Length: 118
Image 1 (cartoon, one colour):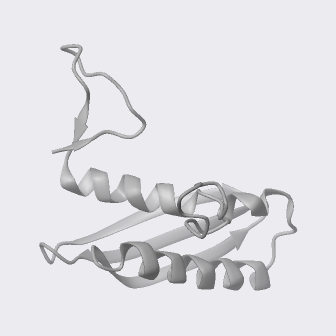
Image 2 (cartoon, rainbow, N blue to C red):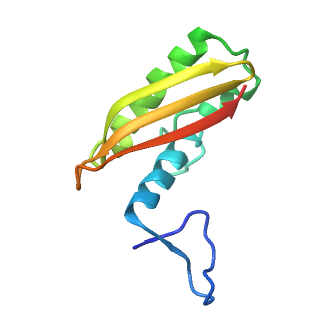
């Protein structure tokens, strides 16, 4: 078991824990929603997705985000997941992100859907 993120307590007052699959999703979300430079000991960690909140939404922006996210996942979580497909779609004022991946340790397929306002 792994510590739950964000940190919380369970019903018994102990530190809440999450399953391996939930922990992997939490790690993906942390990576994608962290800006490079936010982590002192890892200045390149993150994808910079949050910095795009005030940028105009476009197909070009979606392509750039897809490229940087693919690279960040490969660099920091490539030993844990194999990305099968990563799709970023611009929808009005949001970016819809769909990540289909395989957990390397189990071979289990999973997907994660996120949205970010621009």
